[in-house]
Picture 1 (cartoon, rainbow, N blue to C red):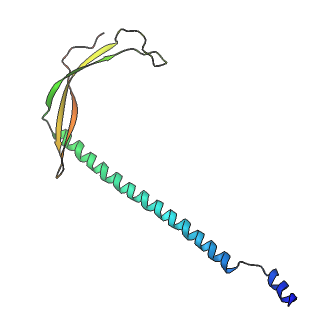
Picture 2: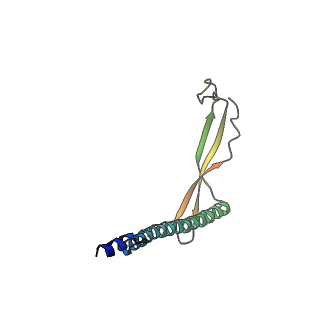
Picture 3: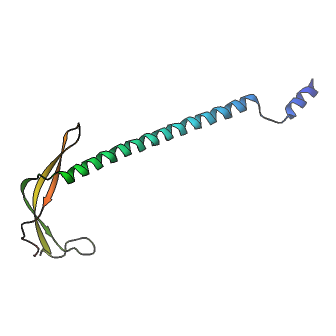
Length: 127
């Protein structure tokens, strides 16, 4: 009997439990990879859908010509030092622009309002 136990102990190879554990670990890793691939595929589909909607909005915005004028704005630009701080109190230049808005209607969806900068009043350009 001792001889039989010693022969069985010296045998090389994997037991059934070890093989089953390795298989389960492989299946768990495969399931995690499947979830990641499915998530990436869904994100790609959403990205394509959003890009299509943006392209549709851009085309509609270019075609739309009516602009509701809502006033004007003046933008003042100051010179900056290399560290990003304002160098001096005198303005480098000013720009006066008209402000407006355009409404774009998409097929079967709500209207989208865009703010639009209109040509300036011809003033500005100097300090």
